[in-house]
Image (cartoon, rainbow, N blue to C red; front, side):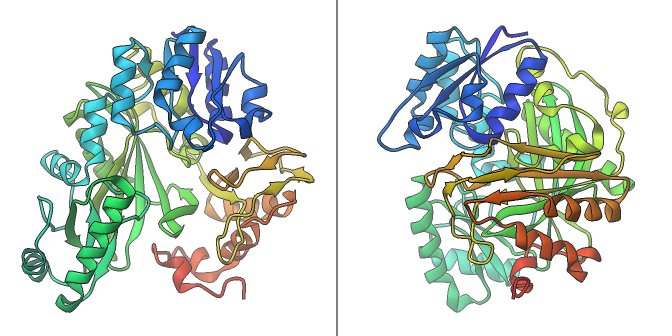
Length: 445
């Protein structure tokens, strides 16, 4: 095991990683920008290295400075968390050149999975179901139109290097195609420096289901699924699990493990799918890092996924077999974002009062506290509230109770929206698709 690890992140995930490191007896190092110098992850670390930049994001994106910080404190490894440098293949290669271990997959795997076209081809070859679409980047509107006619409308144009819903456009007719293609290419170039796009069948009435995987480069196991269909602007808001039958879980779980093994994956990964109204699955992407919603899986399996990812990075093999993974009860996670709950506009500010719930089956992952100054330059996630119940009904009741006990004064939050969702009949009946919030736009009146 490592003696010292640098966390190249901030906020709740930095604190979450530090807890697993401490349990493993590893010293915690962390970088921080000016805005985070008094934050809990920094205050509770063993070593804190300031990286102050005029643009706050650059404090966490300047990977040469991050590597210098790791060398300065003698860290043997860097944990990227999620976001920032977590999927940056150039950063991973620089770590390798400096003999610093990156806690995650290698650079070639990140490059492969970051290219949606190549990832799609690789996973299809491994036996995962994919939606009908193009195997190469599409440049010519005529070629794209012909392909769309063959696939059947509606289709969706996606950025090859995309993420977060950027560079995506649904097309319902040939007349819409050229303008939609130009728009997606322009957005992809602006956001990712890569204008390549591809065309795929649009799955109507889809649900978003993802599988948690851990692999050691040769073997892989899965920890079941999470249901993530309640989203705003393609960003998840409320997640839960389990969702599928034992039979479907076993079938798709076997396939994602084969997908991980086929590319020599090491570490934590999430395989994301769209599921149509007939129950058919279509591969969406692989997220090669720890997910915000990993907590749900930890609650229903009783494992520490972050700790296992660190152990794999240190050179250990998979610590458990597939048949040792047992599922118990139901878990729900609500992301408590500092946002206007109707327009989803960020609401930075100072927390004048702050109280989170507790009790049996309640977990809160947060870096917030009374007096915390929520900056406006980073993601709006303030806390993650997770509950466990013996079944979904109990988990819903427990989440409603936990939300009513949560006090956050000084910023707006999405708590009112979460409360409304938990009371809504379609949610209670599991009648949920990725269009849920658009179809229930009057939840808050």
